[in-house]
Image (cartoon, rainbow over all chains, first blue to last red; front, top):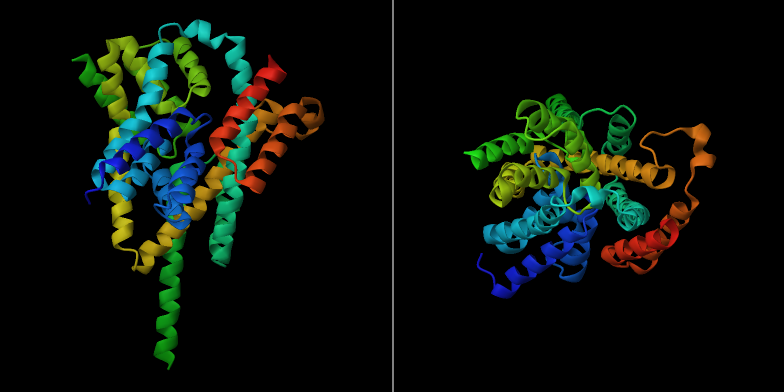
Length: 193
Length: 187
């Protein structure tokens, strides 16, 4: 999957840019990727972004880096993934590298604290915007099972503080059992005939 | 070799942290503070604070910071590479597997289940961020809702969300606007 150099340069620049603005956790990368990869460049569809987000979430490591790698892979194969990954790592490396030298004065800086406190509302808005669109996509599938899984996972994690890995594992297990059950029913119906 | 030890330790941390976010804080602390003794608990707490203030994932920020403290720039590169390499490779393999076996009912349904469940988890992360932004806490207390409410944050949240829904404004612009409004209201 050889792509023009321009594509790789775009991946490099876009991931540098996205990574530099990822305050407030890895999930903010999802709307950013959507903005640039899906809406602007139309490299892939929103449905595929949800697949990638699900994979990035269910595998070890940082969600933001995994998602950048997957989007890069989708656009430019393995070289695309490597470039995207490196680009996503450079901003935090550079910022932390500089800050680690004089970090006590950074922590207590009033200007930094004010900007970050303001950004909390921005992060919340960006994530809620994404949640609305993603919920609409799941609802479109008209599956009561998949729809019920959203609040169930939310309550399990937010209210009961259950480990993310356990939640993901149990939901996969339930789904496999459901398919199995479905197949068994189908077989019995055919046998009756 | 210090760099190699950093790489191995953070590779373990990276591979053990599914779901990311703040759930992995105790895991990192266990490894770098208690087991390896590279940094003190105080410095570790400072790193978490800094991580909230700077872009980038917590695991990457911590590995960079610890790496620099322990073995300079190459320490940082080794630690960060370790933290992300395993996860990225596994994510790519899993994605390729899903792409190849999309026709299989089981794979299709598992992917659907992961999508729904991870959406629930994103909502959970969103709720935690909203609690922090509006109430300044990480736990929900209904009785102090009105007294602790940060009205500036709530109003700017509603306005920003309106901008996003109505005109599909670039998320980065939203971050810039909210950062500047922080300077105006909180400084």
